[in-house]
Image (cartoon, rainbow, N blue to C red; front, side):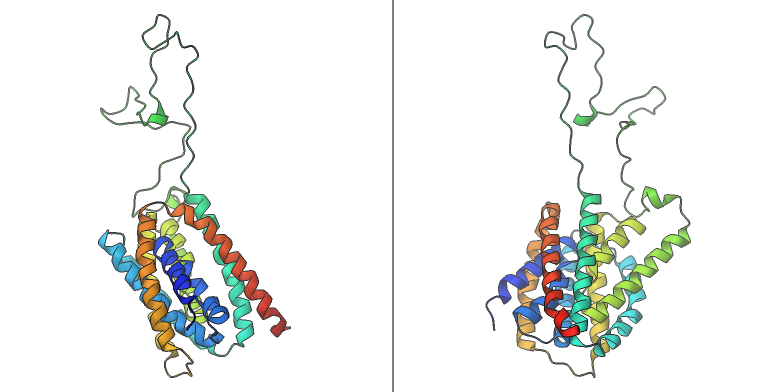
Length: 315
């Protein structure tokens, strides 16, 4: 067994715990190109590794109240049938074609993670304006009345506002929607359209999980955050529940088919990845934004490497 199992499994577990998705997509290429597994066996092994690791990460998030079990269970249930279909389709696909398609999936995941990082990154604070003259202070003659500084978090009061009710800076971005409500850009849309978006995302996640043996968290997290208005910690925690359920369903669909899995390797890989998930949870509680850009670049690099290795066998 290669010593590279340890760093690879730690990286995958940490990214899964911190970002709620994206890390599992590296499991298959790592098993194939680094640990010498065949493509179909790697996708099956990935379901075991990703499912158990996601379950461990979900428990840690649930202790902090970041898992919404009812919504996550419904989302996962919608994708179960699709995960069965994806597993059956995967069994009949040539291994090189499967890996080439997988490289395309990694590029999609990298783009989704980059877009999410840009949309959720905290805005940079502009420095406070310097006073026009050091000799003119708040109490000096001719000095203008003091103006609350929004950069310091002081509310701007208006005569018609209720006592104690702050009014934000008119030029600032609108506040984020409360957890559990749709975001402002979806607030005026038909509720049925939002439901259709969630159903479509759930089916895509189930199909991707069954076909490629990955969790699909890069689809789940944006769907929960944008369509259902989950806060980002809730979206990450709930996505782990969805990944665990879909992985179990897809693995069940493969029972009875020829499985070429190195189970001792899977056991060690899973144990190390679970430890990495605990570290990832600590990152998620701090600042995961620093992890996303580097991980996105890594996904793109692995995608091009996978495509380069697979394309000659397809043509």
